[in-house]
Length: 276
Ligand SMILES: Nc1ncnc2c1ncn2[C@@H]1O[C@H](COP(=O)(O)OP(=O)(O)OP(=O)(O)O)[C@@H](O)[C@H]1O
Image 1: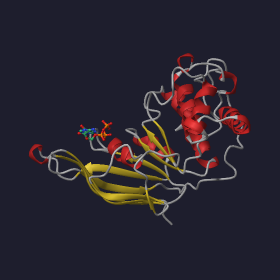
Image 2 (image 1 turned 45 degrees about the vertical axis):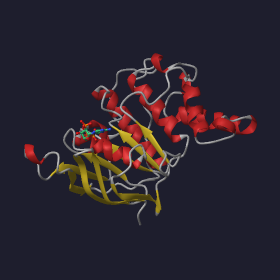
Image 3 (image 1 turned 45 degrees about the horizontal axis):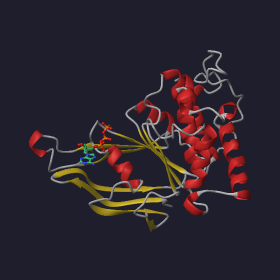
Image 4 (image 1 turned 60 degrees about the vertical axis):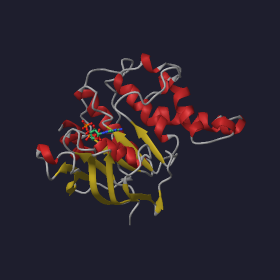
């Protein structure tokens, strides 16, 4: 079964071929990590999945339907930085995520719909460990807390596909372990697929069900404009990870180190994968 189909996709900017002949079938509830050298087109590929860029050739389908030419609520996104709005509170940011999904005039929600969205936002913020920071502004949060907020903001729209562009790349290693754990939990609990760009191979294998490498098969200086990157490796991670594992999340929750209000400095000991 396929959720995302990428069919013979090429991307060129003027004379430069960035990606060529990309063919990919992604099953529902996958967690795909995209890796590859700098400049090989990983972000460009993600931006095409988001409809921020259009393929020069080929097509991309979700659930058998060509993706809409505009970014839609079926696809959420979190970037390395600046995914949240600095002038809105934590709660305001997540509510905006609900409003952007589309309710009423100019996306504003009113009455019962707003009350429900607020309840949902509070629940989601609790799930990502920010329930005590609802009225704070992003500048008052640590980097890890901001990324957890960005995840909550993306998830409130219930995307079918969550796109992540180096979401944890700017975090300190210890905090990154905490956020990895949260990310796995969110993937298990929310009925979505995840496509994540990362520079970090160990992060890719730590989180994903499948690791896909992009690279240029022809990379002589005189070939760099005319030949783009394509898929050079496609690895199913073993042991197989299956989304929705009912046992996941039953382990005790430890304080999060990126949150000054909760930190106690102890490393995560409840998840052997995080010790790696
Ligand atoms: N809007 C654009 N106009 C022209 N060229 C672009 C544009 N966006 C990206 N490129 C070019 O496409 C190539 C791939 O860029 P991209 O950012 O997708 O690579 P990447 O693999 O994500 O790199 P990194 O790992 O360093 O983030 C680069 O040569 C870049 O200069």
